[in-house]
Length: 321
Image (tube, rainbow, N blue to C red; front, top):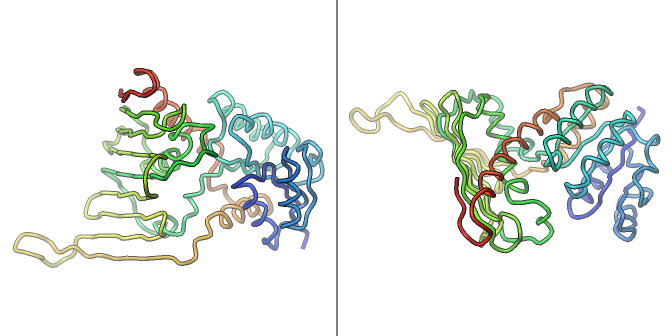
């Protein structure tokens, strides 16, 4: 069996895990890791048994596919060079710094006929995947994604850092255009927005209330979905799923019983599933789970939310729209 030759560009906190997954997949060969920090590149290469490079252009022509896990401001330039050369790309979220860049990348991928997947990791969370057989018709969605402050994440605001995960999931579940938006938030420990709440109203009547914070005491990644005759709770952090349904009996006279089904998943290597899905799309032509168009839609909504909050009073005051 011929292996898919792969590389990882950017082996900081997240990229080094990408490299480890490629090295462990039996359908892929990790050819090289690339980072402008030579020491980081060599550490990752030694860990994964591959070459260490400092210039990503040195591997164009040597690999079939690449993961790009660099700061968002570099996404466009690096992804463009690989896509233009016919290399399949798994690009970490958000897809780009601007909508113009995101549109250009998706267009280029279509023109070159290559796989272009965006790294919205929660799509591969075992609890979310278990929803695959459940018919979703959300009327109201509430999500909370909060975490303690991490200095490494401050190149983008909390909407593009954390909230965009839930935006992607919600847009995929509701499958209806956003009719209106309202948002408020503020910066706390960085120069960017650190906590934001947004309310999305869709044309089909669904409403989503989304909160993200990177200045919280504890971590939580939870989504609640309310729809006719069912309430669904997804715990992304602890990989748990609870589905409440209306039963046929009565709990009290005139009040139907509520049936509860719970699932938990000990094995939740979402990143490995994401990379295996990418390699499968490259090798076998299986559908891309998170396309460039998906990444573009999520970015467009995230940037609209950010702009609404940023258009209000200066940093340090609560801003709303």
